[in-house]
Image 1 (cartoon, rainbow, N blue to C red):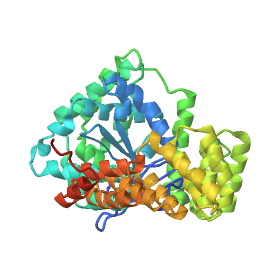
Image 2 (image 1 turned 180 degrees about the vertical axis):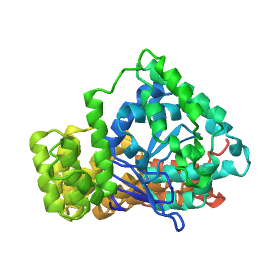
Image 3 (image 1 turned 45 degrees about the vertical axis):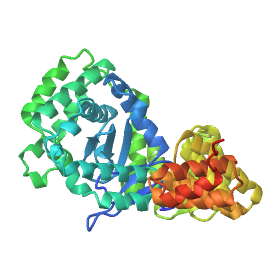
Image 4 (image 1 turned 30 degrees about the vertical axis):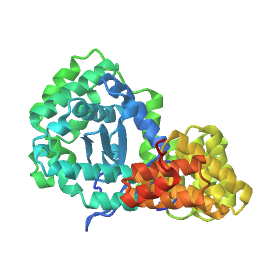
Length: 469
């Protein structure tokens, strides 16, 4: 994992004992005091798999899937959560414990029940006045990390009392029951079985007898009981969809997701769980990633090449190869596979940013300019602050100081760093030609970034008031 750019597995070192975000482009989070570090990761392939499982359930809950943010948390502990603002978080530890897609769908449906029922806002502890600003700060930190700003996210989350906050988000048994029933109704509406949710809870029934401190975090905030499980089982068995099973494609995707998570987070364990004798696609994929994480890049590239021979249009394999080569300073070799990843997945902004980053690091002015266009294209699809940072780097290398300062202003503006955004925007205005698109955008940033009286006076010099006749 790297901490800069948009690598395949780009962690944002986080102080979030529950936040990971993959991407064939990854980002990291922040450290949490003396506790084990966790990461907020983004991975386009895994995000697609999670949304494929979640979107029908979210729609059945009356939610707009595109408006629900799903976070993947790099934490071995078993946990999941739903917060205000339609945000769901799933620890890698929880996903790895699910044995099939239906089990994960059950958990997703349950969390959707909390969101649809506004339980995060109604939780008793949440009514404490001191907790609301804590949650707001934590939310801003998560957004900053998602956007690719680990330092800003770390600061916000570190100041939010994140660990204590999640502990305070415990649901009442009544809310848990309602989320169970709501989740089952979403599974029913989407023609799926609730058997997986019962299986998952049944698997951890023993948690009921543990003392609070010994339970998994998920079962501290989501109290489990045998009575609750049996009520769920009775309800599930009455459904006409009880015997519906996951499709072969869903089962394969789930295996791929778990293999990828394990290989990136625990490469040594992945090498044990996926021995050379296992010739399945998920196993070979996991071994390639594990070798890469263990810095045996030549063997990793060889395994990916063998997979590409079978799946030459797999954008994620191309991106993986490109990212491995880029991270090991083989930038020229990384260009072609990253071009292929964008060719086969043109609407994935994170892959396009990877390509843009590689192009601007080749030292070729023509390719640098092409990289700038790739980054701008990615920003049309998704506001990703790190793309602005890379653009600032490219503009500086090209000698466009005004555009570089403007891109830096955009970077801070997208992260909520209004003081920094305003400062860089004012500098951009001084360097850009008046009344150009860039100059006007810099002016807009200044006006919306809490300008001081002196800033407004400087702006007024460019637009003096029209005198009366």
